[in-house]
Image 1 (cartoon, helix red, strand yellow):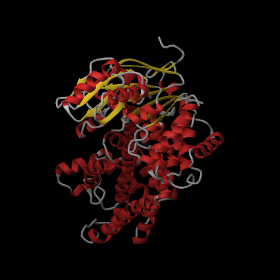
Image 2: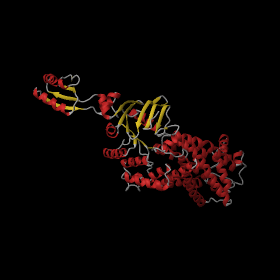
Image 3: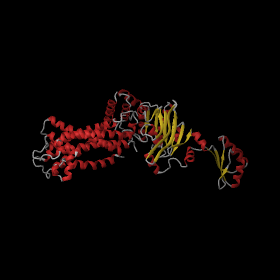
Amino acid sequence: MSAFTQALGDGVVVAKRNLIKIKRVPDLIVFSTLSPIMFVLLFAYVFGGSIDIPGMDYREFLMAGIFAQTVVFGSTITGSGLAEDMQKGVIDRFRSLPMARSAVLIGRTTSDLANNVIVILVMSLTGLIVGWRIHSSPLEALAGFALLLLFAYAVSWGMAIVGLMVRSPEVFNNASFIAIFPLTFIANTFVQESNLPGPLKAFAEWNPVSAVTAAARELFGNTNPMAPAADAWPLQHPVLMTLAWVVVFLLIFVPLAIRQYRKAVAR
Amino acid sequence: MARMADAIVAEGLVKRYGSVVALDGLDLVVPEGTVMGLLGPNGAGKTTTVRVLTTLLEHDEGKATVTGLDVVADAKELRRRIGLSGQYAAVDENLTGFENLDMVGRLYHLGKKRSRERARELLERFDLVEAGDRTVKTYSGGMRRRLDLAGALVAKPRVLFLDEPTTGLDPRSRLGMWDVIAELVAGGTTLLLTTQYLEEADRLADKIAVIDHGRVIALGTANELKDQVGGERLELTVGSAQDAATAKAALTPLAIAEIAVDERGHRLTVPVSGGAEVLVDGVRRLDAESVKVLDIGLRRPTLDDVFLTLTGHATGKTGTEDKQGEKGA
């Protein structure tokens, strides 16, 4: 058995273990889907009346942004899950076994991807109920969902690094919120980036979350025909840019996460 | 070089955390098929030693082999041959007992069928058959520890590491755990056991290495260690200083060293050898001299005495500051 297939096999065993948790503790998935539902409803009905996107219905504009925000939040489970396993000594047990060094991380990120698939399904239904529609071909729509999930998967490797560095899942959650809120709000997720003041606009244009949001809008056919053309290159080519971010994230995060795992010891 | 018969060999292990020296030239040899007890207070370096030997932590200096394999260079192969049960039960609460063991079997690459068989075998052996299909969340502390120990045995390891296997257990569960471990080592497994409990080391270990500040400061069987501190002594209390003088004279022929009398002159300590017979003999001599004895007894040093003598501080009573140290160590 080659090292690669062994790592995959071990990863499947670990992923299965994580997925059993979703089954045994259904509260987890219930609350991780309830919060995006709440976000959809809050934004659609509370802000929807005040935020005017000339040329299109706000709910159509909103959904891609909420999808992006939600899958990024979903990717934090990777970090808090690993932090919890560290705290409980489970990582020590894994590290004393003759398994591939990358297997725990492969398993973790894979099961969290599965979690995100479920969340996206629930959110899509909620979106359809409040008036969101896909205006593209099924193939394009599928590509949109795939891109969102791929983006979240790449981000979850970054979450893994932080999760293995902190001392508890609580610390991880607090730390990740501080990073994720600005990243998902200073973007084109809930407002048009062209309306943001100078420095924030520049940040939003180059923000990876904006790229994936714009890409999803394009692939779902939710683009605004009346919106001014994007100024920045990333938002002119959002699909390409998102794929580029995914590659860059994976190239940086995967080796760093494995390195952190190799020296991670419970305290 | 390590002899084939030595399961664990550590030479001059040094591990530093910043300016804190967790291991300070630790030497240790554990012959195959024996039980070595690592005894020491919190922060002494016990857990660090186990982590280095089980490849979880890389040491800064020195060399260590387990079953002849280097803990750094041959780490991967080494992990196939060892089992580790840590300070806390590293079992997954959301899985059943069976699923926990099955998963470990799969990660040792035993294959699907063999992993399942082995999980059932171990549940039976550790008296967890009925609980086997319940989630671990419902288990008591003792059951979790047993399951964790079972996890360490899945691949029938040649060398087993147990880091404070009974810390935090109630007395009854502790006794149960001791029975399980005693049965295990009767089967010939090499075991390195760390503990803060002298009684545990006394009961389970063939040899005890006392460690303090990251070094082995004494090594031997429980009896050898006790002998290092001093042998038996007769201790008696009398009613008056005059009786004490008479008693001292009467017992001098039995003493193998000088008899000590306390400040008040009522209490005598007589170093002796020969066990209970000496006690009987002493009582006869005192009776013949009509000494009024308030209390008399033969005392052997306990491991507590050993510890106190060797380290200058008692075990497990080093306070909460040291606890932090151990956590980091």
